[in-house]
Image 1 (cartoon, rainbow, N blue to C red):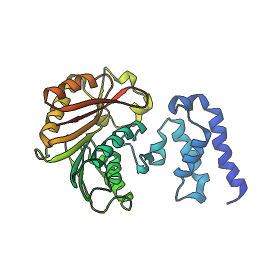
Image 2: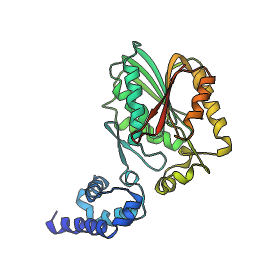
Image 3: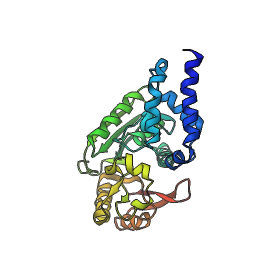
Image 4: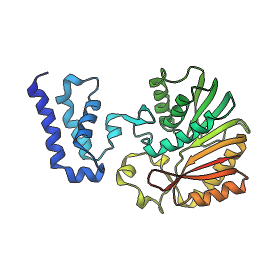
Length: 289
């Protein structure tokens, strides 16, 4: 590849960045030129000798405000790289708090055999990260459940991509379904979830327009009128499916977590704890049956 060719696409990126700083910051707050240059390299993986053919396509998608993770098809989460597309949510760094907390709790358990279910698994990032970290357990049976068949295809692809870093003695499966409808009673040691937790009308005003425009609404929103009932049913399923002393951890909306704690109390959950995210907002519920 000639130096002239390198300068051509490199100069296009630099010119685009400086000409569109204001609009880029609306879509990608705090975006840097280096981040764009790095993501263009990822975008061109496998076709490094044909960057000139890809630069315009890359910049058009960037100009439209498409999330960089969807442009490149890759998102980094909890020490691993995951494939993502618009069938799944982009894994957020704050969700790593959920993974870290669950991993710590399960590692400290004296159980050798453990079962875990991830409800609304999406890309599988949460479940696969937990499985990868629990290499000290002789046997872990893990299942990711999602209502979207397209999301499960992404999760299965990520399992395949991470196959060499996942402990061989763990069993991972994927299931199409709505929450825990088909999960056996008193069968699970740990249930985790990052469910849709945004009220479509009441809370949508706080959602970044890029998220609303590109990420799957089925994984983001619930109807306002059925919101409480949806979680009431979900928490009842969690209670029924967990073994005694089983662990439950869920990501949720800061405006509704306090009310959800009261629901868990009525179901006789114990050790209920609200955990904050990196911005000091209440973001997670942790409880035991």
